[in-house]
Length: 87
Image (cartoon, rainbow, N blue to C red; front, side, top):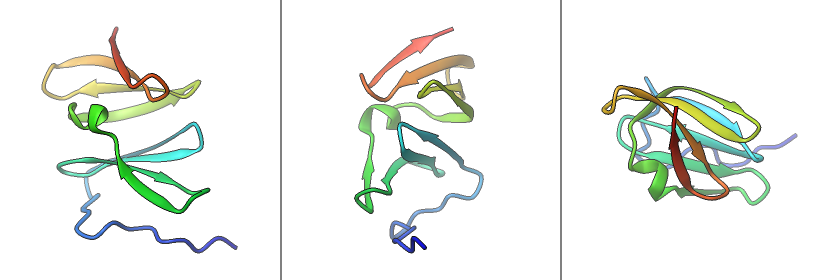
C-alpha cells in the first residue's frame, strides 16, 4: 500500500479543487496551485496555472477545463504545453 507524504507545509485546501491529469494530482488551495507526482513522491507548483484562479474544474483527455473566477469565463489548460485556451 502506498503511504507517501500528502501535504505541503502551510497548504490549505479547504474550498479548493483537485483534479488528476497525466498521472499527477493538481490541487488549488486558497492562494496557489500545487502538483503532486505520486511516482516520485514530489510536490511542485505550476507557475502558469498559478496565474489563474481556477475552480469548478474537470479533466477530459488530460486537459483541464475550469471556470476562471476573475475573467468570468470557461477556460482550458494544457499541462503538457503549459498554455491556456478560451471557450
